[in-house]
Image (cartoon, rainbow, N blue to C red):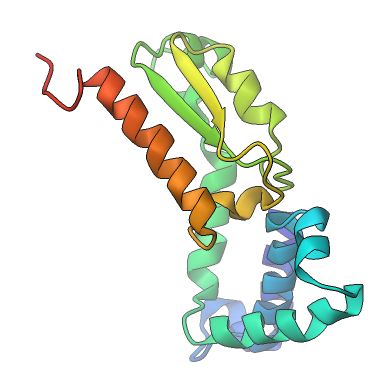
Length: 180
């Protein structure tokens, strides 16, 4: 999915090999469409729009809103960093991701979005299986917001994130007190 977003941006003549003077608009709009397909579950669209075609003007408005703040090169570098990050590359882990996860000693909270198409639920659950004292919590198990659950747009998602994070921090800090 991330490769598709990069291709959309880099295929836009306005990208100009990264030497653009304004955001490559056509590639940016296509990038946004791809990301909305990945970041929101089909159920989220179904609950928001009466007809499937009602999503089109909404997507166009989202694209237009984004163009003023979109930096194509920033997105490209973020995705390359995201894909290449591997805790197995930590010194002493010899490229073994499981070994690196097994070595984590800190209490760990992993929050995930249900129906997340960009970061499927099985991935963080699988990683947590190798981390001692890892707690995995769905942001809102009944939610259909998918990847967007962590984006802050839905007040119920934000409240769930704050509640879970606060409870976790209270647990690991003895109610907010600094532990030595």
